[in-house]
View (cartoon, rainbow, N blue to C red):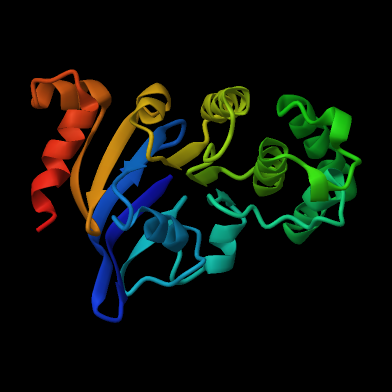
Amino acid sequence: MIEVINLSKQFKDVKAVDNLNFTINDGEIVGLLGENGAGKTTTLRIISTMIKCTGGTVKVNGVDINKESSKVRSQIGILFGGEVGLYDRLTARENIRYFAELNGMTKDAADESIKNLSEELQMTEYMDRRIGKFSRGMKQKVAIARSIVHEPKVILLDEPTAGLDVSSSRLIHDFIKNCKKQNKAIVFSSHSMEEVQKLCDRIIIIHKGKMVEQGTINELKAKYNSDDMEQIFMNLVGDKNE
């Protein structure tokens, strides 16, 4: 579903992404793992067509981001960490419906999708309240629903549980697993090794824009003869900081 080909991104003197190559299949959750500044978010932003690459390309379901960016955008759902960018004066329902309309959904299709998402994410009791005074967890649920209301085939998640409590994080974990059951391709960025091990079928470790390793959790544990994924990660990137 996603094919990253010789992907690079240069910001002045900094090479944020350096010749990345990897693929992500339908029904697969792949974790992008790396320290701050490793290039994870830049890679996700390029895949989402939010920024342009300097070299290489990405194909989403066979569509090239450099040639048909609008067609790519219609097939992806995006949720980045930090500010969720919702409209405080609108209700949860209105926020989600606005993005459904931006993606060309009919009223009936939007209504059905919003109903299903509100139930799945346990938002029904506050769907018609303005979100200005929502908690961080409530806003994050609305942001997730907004990003996938048009039922995209590819989902890009950058730190989706950042700042959330345990119950909200678990609900989002269950939601991600359900997306996998629906045969969606999911790219999941996180700083939590525990979260990555819990959710991801495969991980890609990035350091200073370059991919230093990839594989399943079990493959990496066997390859490096260790059950400690944090130590494996530190061994792979810790000696490369000079």
